[in-house]
Image (cartoon, rainbow, N blue to C red):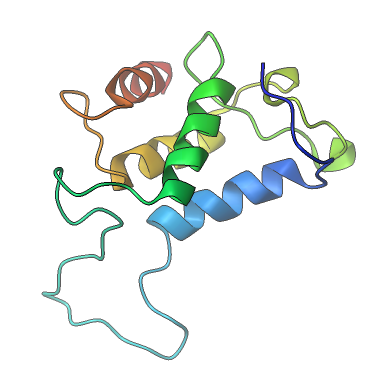
Length: 124
């Protein structure tokens, strides 16, 4: 089990913001992307090394996955809970994490987190 270096408030909000940053907004407010433009990717190719910050985040997500294949965000009323296994899994959080794993270059056939992605999809 992972233990944080320092207490963190809003761990579910942090997880959600990371997932949205990896798979969410493609443009800044006021910017538009051409309709035929491909979506931006964190990883340009499967051969490109991942940045250290992204690898650390993926390692944390892998360690936070529950035995049932899902992830949970907890409750807005219990943000002091910092153990990712002390919360109930839910489909929404699991879907966001699965998107983050895919945006990092994983598929169910390849990638360092392919097994975790497959378990998440089975959960969903």
